[in-house]
Length: 434
Image 1 (spheres, rainbow, N blue to C red):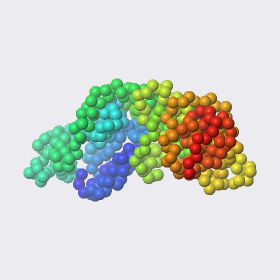
Image 2 (cartoon, rainbow, N blue to C red):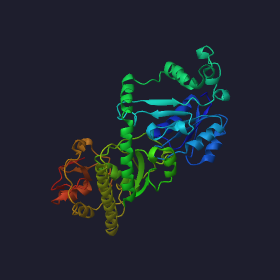
Image 3 (cartoon, rainbow, N blue to C red):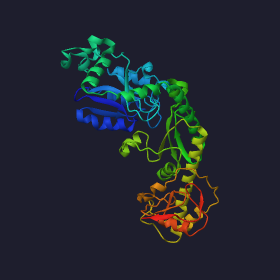
């Protein structure tokens, strides 16, 4: 890449890639044109830009689980005289081998995700097919097809043939720029690769079971997983993915939108909530990460345990939304109108919430992860029952931060109230922090 050159990239990439291509590369005087993953005419038009130097795509998109038509993309890229570079992070070589389907470089693939098998080793890998003819596009790629001043006029494409890009990456990327993996991380990654096939089988099989469960769940609005028979990407999965699997990462949306989704994320115990790279609203929606999206990265646990955790969390979202609606109805009935603390402008009703908290729901067993250590952190959160914004929270003996001050009074005044998170029956509020 030379100053002024442009990357044509899918708009459905990992958040870090979107940030790098959309912002960071501008510091090198490079540009990036993002195109719709399903609009090949848009791709072809973007590649007609005389400054376009590569087409960058994901074999299995993160977060949406969209399977790309690699053969068609390769034909478009080669027709424009540029290489197709594919991020194969989520699929891994176990599910997809992009080079077999026309890609020139399987690059920018993170080894931190599935290849290493654990999150302790940071790294990435670039695999060059050696098939792209750099000499035929010498004006576009002078660093490879013309004399390189930094190496005594060496022409990499002439000297190394199909190893040109690999040798250039070693000479410039490693020797000059220092982009090399730490030895310990390389060791851990190589060890992880030995169990890749066994682990990916479990990841993918578990994901398929959970996706089918969620697709049938009445509180789930939609599921985006290429392994489902109903997925619009099922045909592409059959063409490009081993066993037609959809990978181990997919997304879904909860009935009730953002508020219900927040409640699901807060209620799960076996799953962990991990923050992601911040994007603009436009970038998130283009990447398939709208306000109602929950992304799941499925592990190696037994699918029954994963389903139980999600099922409980979805039930809690149902309770929270029901309380919100009931509070709103009573507020309007009593003329309380809209309050300033509620995200929907509704004043919470202790009577309505008391009915929810005292509902005859089967108590849940103890042994989850209590949030008692989080008690002193104060407020700024939304009440998990009425979704009111507050700085005062009540803490139940089970350790969960359950309700705000308005709701907490209902729990404190009534015996045998149930924690709305774990359903443990308690007879008093432990403490109130401001």
